[in-house]
Amino acid sequence: MSWSVHATSVAESCLQRNAWVCPAYVRTRSDILLEALVEHVWLTFGAVALGLVVALPLGVLASRSQLVETGASSIATVLYTIPSLAMFPLLLAVGLPFGPSIVVVGLAIYTLGILLRNIVVGLRGVPEDTLDAATGMGLSARRRLWSVELPLALPAILAGVRIATVSTVALVTVGGLFGFGGLGNRIITGQQTRFNAEVLTATAMVVVLALVLDGLLLLLERRVTPWARGRAA
Amino acid sequence: MNDSVVGAAVGWLVDPANWSGTGSIPVRLWQHVWISGLAVLIASAVALPVALVLGHLGRGGALASTVANLGRAVPTLAVLVLLVLSPEPFGIRNVVTCTVVALVLFAVPPILTNAYAGIRAVDADLVEAARGMGLTGPQVLFRVELPLAVPLVVAGLRIATAQVIATATIAAIIAGPGLGRFITAGFGNQDTAQLIGGAFLVATFAVVVEVAFQLLQRRLTPARSSRTTVDPVLAPLPVDTRQPDLTGF
Image (cartoon, rainbow over all chains, first blue to last red; front, side):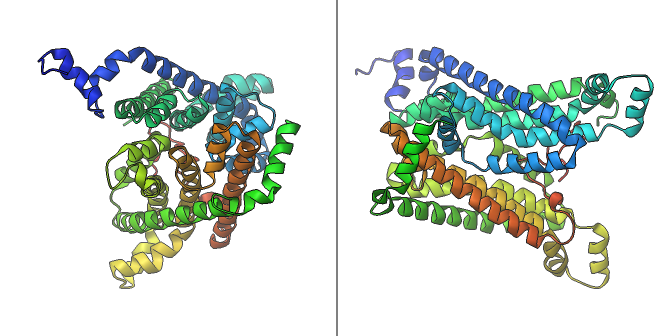
């Protein structure tokens, strides 16, 4: 390499120096990074969505029965302590095919505890008078659940979704060991090739993604609670 | 249930060859135990005094919640890999140091937030009464606030320990010590028996420790139900959803 004072050579040199922060890396590998980001978002979304699909009916039952609540939440707590690196292979043992589904299902299991708890708190928080009024207006139990109870529980549910999403974004990276980790794939490859910029860039993107999703869900939370707006400090 | 996979994993688990020598199950289990224990000890030594003092003074609520939120948003895998790529005293030749440091970093938030919340949750009237009886600040902290905060302090230790055991497993990806090595080796060598057997060992170990802690916590929680715990991982419930989580502190 000659000492040509080209703008590019200065930029490329951060690749040669294996610098942690390297704009040239981001510029030249933007397609790979974007692909990893998109995969990361999908895995996160899939896990939280699946968690909600399971937790919602379970939460409705749990809000009506102490027995269901205690049972479901203690199972969720125990499942939560299984390390993710072990959870993914264990899902293979229970019959899931090798693929992104082990990551999505595994991470969905971790969201159950927090989602369940927030759904129960939200539903139990609906005032007795409101329920009586709804029944008095002739709403069936099903209508009352969908048009009164769940909308009123929505802020608490969304607060749970927000926490679940942030921790899922971080956990998706572990799927990288099996090749289904979104930005985690970049972190693992970067470690194997000792490529500092790749690891730090992917890490920063994971943290930023978590913060952005956190902010977006917070906005959504505010939006679905118009009655709280006046009271908000 | 995938019977052939489960059968192979059981075969691996009962194979005497996997129970002796370097890198055997007892060796890896012991590594996992001591490294996790050490990390929880160091994290407690760092976080507990800070939490107790801040809780006693009623300051630093924002700090506690920021630490908890950061602990949730930063991927443990990334921290492990960043440390192993860093220069001395970290780096690939100091994998154990890298692992312990990462474990401590992720054990601090739950210990800190729960101990802080525990002290803050003590009835203000009780503290007032203790002061009225002439107890000094430290006496109030150690004779009134701390004893009442014990269940939450233990809850924090329980959550931190679960976090540490999980992170120690992930440390196998950077060739760190512990049971996770069976999972990475099993996957790397396409040895399904070892992969699943290792995962089973890790899960069993984590669940056994969790259940033991829950029993301990129940014993230490007087008459009141055990539902008074604040769990920053499984959510300090922001029932007032106009505010971000953990504002209860």
